Structures are given as structure tokens and as C-alpha cells.
Image 1 (cartoon, rainbow, N blue to C red):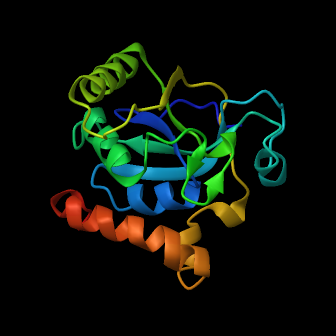
Image 2: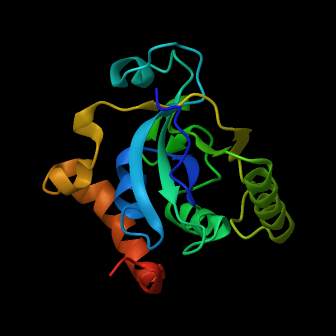
Length: 185
């Protein structure tokens, strides 16, 4: 479990939007994000691992915990990228990944983050921008468990793997097109 606070002048953001490999690949390229760790949160088991989380019995979601510099990127901008790269209208599912571990969720690290996330969710409800109700869970961040080492920087280390080619790469391409100005140089 990582319980240390973020480095001075930085903040954490913890997000669940399907497989953590997709989220990690995208947020690793976002300007202002200084670190991305794939892991698990939101469950009840004291020692989650990939096999247990995939069983759906631990209650954990696959998440990424970002460390970001709020002087370089606002929390809302992170959320805008998050909502652009996954479907927040499908309950416990992203594409072929099905189960509570693939839910859409925002785990807030402060009341300010919670208020910003709730305001954005309220905007979505008011405008109906997604054409269906947004089912993204909003909760305060709890214990974070880093995923096993082979999950870290998965896409960078496994670009030719079929899941990476057919699921991760299209999300990364979408991000690169929509947020070209926000990519790291």
C-alpha cells in the first residue's frame, strides 16, 4: 500500500475507467502528470492482487493513481481527458472488459477534488452530452494498492500484444488527436 503523501507542490488523482493499461498509457503522455501507477482501490479485501481483483470478489476497481503538478494542469483538465477516453455510461463495463473491477469511478483526494468532480458530473447530467446517464461512481480515495510490477508501463513494454494493439492503441490515438496540445513534448 502506498500511503505517502504526494511530493511537495503536487497532488494525486485516482481514476477507474476500465482496464488500467489504457488509462496508464494515456495519462503517461499528459503534460503536467509526473507519475502514473496502476493499482487497485475501492474494495474490501486487505491484500488484493490481479487474480483476486479479476475474480470480482474483492470489490476493488482497476485504477491509475496520477501524481500531477496543479501549476501545470488543473484537476478538471485531467477529468476532461478521463471522460473523453472511456465510456462513463456503461455500468461495470468498458468494451469487452466486464465486471465491477472495470467500473467508471473517480476517487477524490480532497473535498475540492470532490466538488470539482461533482460539478462536472452535474454538467453532464444537465446537458446530456453522452446521450445516456453517466454512471461514474464518485467517492473519497481509500487505500491504494499498486498492481504487480508487470502491469506498470504495460503498454510501453507490450505494444505488439493483441490487447494493446486493439484496445489500448485506439484510446491512445484518440487522446493524441483530441488533446494534441496537452501532450508532453
